[in-house]
Structures are given as C-alpha cells and as structure tokens.
Length: 139
Image (cartoon, rainbow, N blue to C red; front, side, top):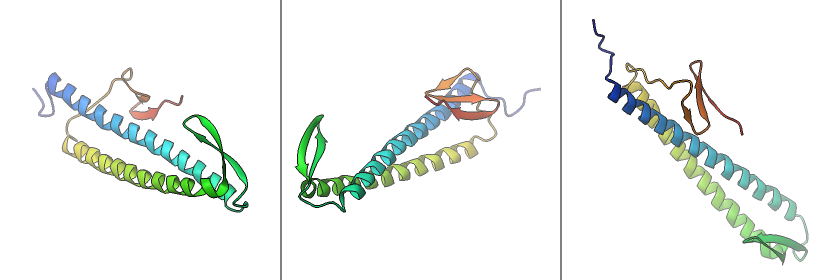
C-alpha cells in the first residue's frame, strides 16, 4: 500500500537541492553580514578615537596596501563616509536575508508534507545535519 507522501527519488533530489540552495544562500548572507558588521564596528572605534583629538595631528591610513601619512582633518571625513556606506550595505544585506528567510519558510510550508532530509554525511559548506538539527562548523 503506497502512501500519498511517497515521492519519486528524482523529485526528492530536486527538493533536497532546493533546500540546500536556500540554506547555502542564507549562510553566505549571514557571513557577509558578519563581515560588514565587524568592519563597521572597526570604523566606529577609529572615529571615536580620532574625534576628540586635535584636527592637525598626524595619523596614518592604509590605502591600497600602502601606509600614508595624513592629518585627522583629512582622514575623518572619509572614515565617516565609509562608515555610513557600510551601514547602508548592512541594512540592504539584512533585508535580503529576511526576504530569503521568508521565502524559505514559505517553501517549507508548501512542501511540509514531503520530507526533505539530508544525510548525516552530506555537507553544505560548513553546515551540517546531525540528529535532526543543523549546525555550523566553526573554523
């Protein structure tokens, strides 16, 4: 007696691939978000450090791998511009992540009667499935 929930193996592989693609995309976005957050925090720290100092004081900045000497009044405006740009990029990445997460949740609801499983040995770029749970590999 065949159950209605039985899916042919080819369809099951397609569903597993779609699921893996969603998870992989979310993982990549999360990684980018983490990198941008870290860089924005570094910019904030440098800006907070330089703000109270005299504007004609010497400082050094890395430009394309070359350390150049400037004054705080030359460096601070570009740091603030870069920081604002990073915040905008971060907001956009967060929107993309939420959209993709919602898309994946809707996909899961649509295919809730079908079981999409990943074997314990299957890896998705640092994402593992074990004992019914996903976890990220820490490098």
